[in-house]
Amino acid sequence: MTDATTQIKETVTANDVVLFMKGTKDMPQCGFSSRVAGVLNYMGVNFKDVNVLADADIRQGIKDYSDWPTIPQLYVKGEFVGGCDIVTEMTLSGELDQLFEAKGVSFDKDAAEKIREANG
Image (cartoon, rainbow, N blue to C red; front, side, top):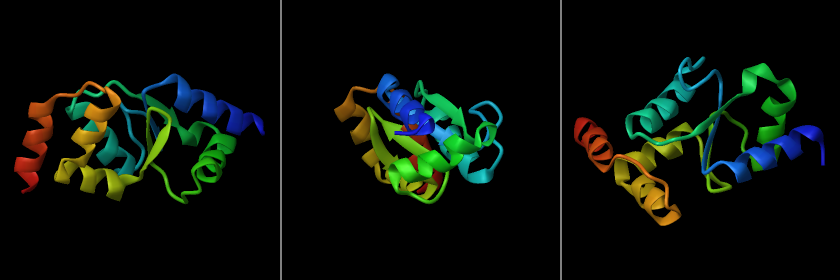
């Protein structure tokens, strides 16, 4: 295992929710990362953000680790959930709520409902 792979594995197992993104949760550096971080922030999810722009090895390593070509990438309890389109779909369908509930991740159910109402 490479250092990047080891670091990625440790990060996704040590944190309940991890978002590998361009930029940070407070200052996203791309629209897709901004959308996913915005959803998580709005829903009050406590998540670890990993800025892939700060480390080229992590940026490539996360793509290899998940076998997923794009960033952002969301992990919940060590499992890869998906990128921006998948997270958006899951948010609007209520599947993300179900995943968080099943995994014991706290979030604001009212905020999740407001997202669906605003996009319904």
